[in-house]
Structures are given as C-alpha cells and as structure tokens.
Image (cartoon, rainbow, N blue to C red; front, top):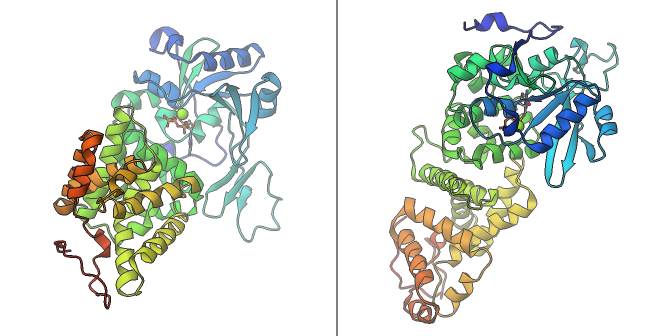
Length: 467
Ligand code: ATP
Ligand code: MG
C-alpha cells in the first residue's frame, strides 16, 4: 500500500521509524555478493557485541541485482569504540564523524547510528541567550545541518536517511533485511521517495536534490511527485554548499556513466544552472543551441568512455563546459578590451577558472590541464613544418585531439576538416607524416579572427569562414 505523503511528516522529537524484518529466506541478498572486507568488519563488530548492519547503496543495489559501488556499514558502536576494535582504523570527518577501516586501497566506511537534533540547536542569529549550542550538532538558520554527530538508535538512523530505498539494512547477526518506510515496495515499484517532508529534507541538506536526480537516472526510478515538486524553488540553496563538496557530487553525477541523463534532468529542475552559473548566458530555453549540443556531446562522450572502461578526467569535462563561455570572453577582451589574442586567452582562462571555483571547485591540478586543452585548440590548426610532429608528442595531445573531434562533430566546417586532418595524420605511417605536414595550410585560430587589422601586419591569405 502506498503511503500518503502528508502522513510521513516527521515530528521533531520522533523516536524513529518502525522496522519490518524480512528473514533470510525471503530476500535475495547473499553473503557471496558482499565484499570480504565488509564482511570482516561486520563480523568483528558483531562478535564484540555491537549491532552491525550493511546499509544504503550496498543493500539497495544488491536487492536490485546490481553490483554495489561500495559497502557502507552502520553500528551502535561510537567511532571511538570502532577505533578501539580495529588496528587499521582512521577517524575522519568533522561535519559527519566516521570510522574508515583500511584494507590496502579498499576502505570500508563505518558510521554510528545517527539520532535526532534538538530543536534549540539551530544556529540562529538571536538565540544567544538560549541553551549553549551542542558540540555534537549544529544547524544554520536556513535549516541546513552543519554538524551531525548526535548518535541514536537504528530507528532514528533510518529516519535521518534520504530516500526510502536507501533506508534498507542488512543485519549480519541473522542475515535478515530491515525495511523502514516501505523501502522495499518502493524499490520493487522503482519509486524514489524521500523520507519525511521533502522541502524540510532538502533544506537540511540541499545536496539531496542532486542525489534525487542521480538515483533517478542511475537506478532508472521515477522521482515521486512530492519529492520533485519543491526542487525548482529550492535549487538556489545549493549556493550554501561548499564548492569542494559539490565537486564530489559533480564526479558522481557526470563521471559514472549517466552524465547525459543527469544533465538533462538537472537542467529541467534548474539545478545545473546552480552548479555552473557561468553558463547561464549560453543556455537557451530549448536547450539545443550549438553550444548546448557541444556540452551534451561532451557528456555523451564521457558516458561512452565509462562504458568502455576508458580513462576519463574531470578536466576534459570542465574544459568542454566552459568552452562556449571562454569563446565569448575572448571575443569581448579582443574586440572591446583591445587585448591581443594570446593575452585574451590567458586572461579569460584564469578568470573563468577562478569564477567557477565559487560553485563547483575543480582541484588546482585539473585547472592546469583545462588550460592546456584550451590552448591546444588554438595550436592544432598550426601544423606546417615541424609543428605537427611536435604537437603529437605533447602530453596533452590526446585530450586536445578528442576535444577537437567533439567540436568538429558539432561545429562541422573547418573544425571538422581539421579534426579529420589530425585523424589522418596519426594513421599515416611516421615516415610519410612530414609530407602531410608540408601540405597543410595553417588556418587561423578560431577566436583570433579579429575584425581589426594591425597596421603593417601580414594578412593571411587563408580562406576565412564566417562567424
Ligand atoms: P552510491 O554509493 O551508489 O552512490 P549510496 O546510496 O550508497 O549510493 P552514499 O553517498 O554512499 O550513497 O551514502 C550511503 C548512505 O548514506 C545512503 O544510502 C543514505 O542512506 C545515506 N546518505 C548519504 N548521503 C545522505 C544525505 N545527504 N542525506 C541523508 N542520507 C544520506
Ligand atoms: Mg555508497
């Protein structure tokens, strides 16, 4: 039976949700599908007298017959007690304290059951004379949870989780599955529902809006009407999330094989616009301009690479996403600002990457690669003499060439011809490449087509294509 959304409203001091226990014989999870390391941790906790459950994506994905990305464990042991139990344990996180059990490169995450926050723990401007704020938990006046280290029972823990399908627990003590909030029937019906009042839950943690999109596409589930309704209005709350956390979400959204689906759904809800506000001047209501087709092509290309187990880097995606804006900035700086092309490229690249850090922050080491991919776009047209051979051995050639292929696909014309030339060049035996390079006519770099002519400067006699 489906629940009516209004009945799920969570009282502030709720004792949590009631579990339904599904015995080993009545569900499909087998220990053979759980990683050895996760099992080791579960058994050790259990043997020491603690409760130990597999929870979240691991249980959900196993029940769906998918291969879980990782196995998360929860327990009634505090992080310190977990620490005492495992030699290979590290305590991490301030906002959300966790134990990491390390097995070489494999990390098993162990969380202590989360409890409820007291209402007076809001971090409002004028509650100075109320009870002193607890060290364990903290809220922003908007309702956002800033620190979350109040421990509780499994019933409370379930209520604190985001979606009903994520509140399924596998008990190592008797191999049963504990269901809260109808998670199992939602899973069977492929229905993605939030636990509690969606608007409240999104305000507590706006990242849940991104998770709603991600799980819809990844699990091929339908987001419930109630969970979908408040998103467009609450999307700007993503502005409160630290840019480094949004980068983690960016990777999960766009580097795990469902980038195109996520991009489209995020745009529908106005969430993409929050992640990449720099792109707002480029986005059109229909979403099918040349620039937007290029962005989609980059996401489709990434999805294909993930499927084929090819290497991907966030630098490539950032380079693609910001490329249409880069073009505009360069044009402004050269025409209105009077800068020479090289300087304009430099200034525009730095400005864009700096501005982007305010929403989704790309780690610095990737920023350098983005700049190189961009710079190479203006070098690849210049192939004559020894230049082509030099470009080919540039460490960034591969990424820059893939980028050019994508541009060619969308722009056609000279760009497509150039991409094709580079394909031929690489397929030509090395001893014949010199000949190809000798025949190449160096086209001007796309954005350097300035209307102004320098006095006394040489005019290229290469055919120019219109803007
Ligand atoms: P996957 O790992 O496949 O991306 P997951 O559901 O395991 O999906 P994680 O981010 O690993 O996602 O989180 C593990 C579990 O922790 C979730 O299933 C959910 O129960 C809970 N959880 C994670 N993030 C939140 C959040 N922002 N709000 C509430 N619960 C959350
Ligand atoms: Mg997980």
